[in-house]
Length: 197
Ligand SMILES: [Zn+2]
Image (cartoon, rainbow, N blue to C red; front, side):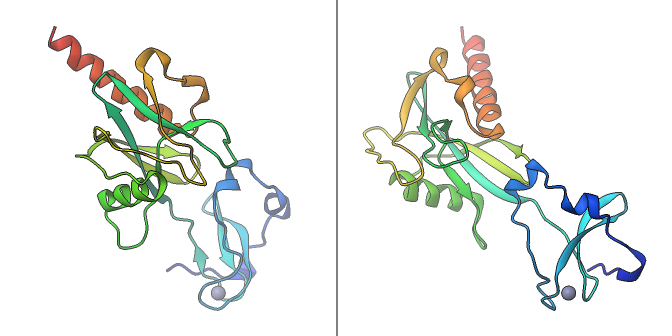
């Protein structure tokens, strides 16, 4: 745990006041978890860091980890849901959410599928891990949609809808990870398909 001498570092008031758009997604603590002192942005090693004004501890904003599941069918189609919360209301996303303490990634996927769509996961395969700006890494898994499964929406997403490759709504996808994972999944599928022709 790094601490600094407060007296030697005068925060740059201009920088502290400036609210960056990208910080909308970062849950910024207000108080020190050790001494309850007030945290303020200060410039350290050319970076903005949150520093406790009482004990001098530096509070690092660690990246968060999320999972998402790209469900697909045999036709070939993928299944997407409409996002029913802001930001990104009405855009298309995959079911998913943040990994909870003590969970491994496959457990997090199963829980999210169950919570959001009342679905059980099929065999899962990692497509990739993508950076959703500014501070979340999303591990995206593919999974076949179990035939005959009935799915329901939740408060956050609509029920799933199938999209054949040519109909994927590329300009209405929400989250960088959604776009990149679908792109990678489709590219691999098409490549495999070409090899077998
Ligand atoms: Zn403190």
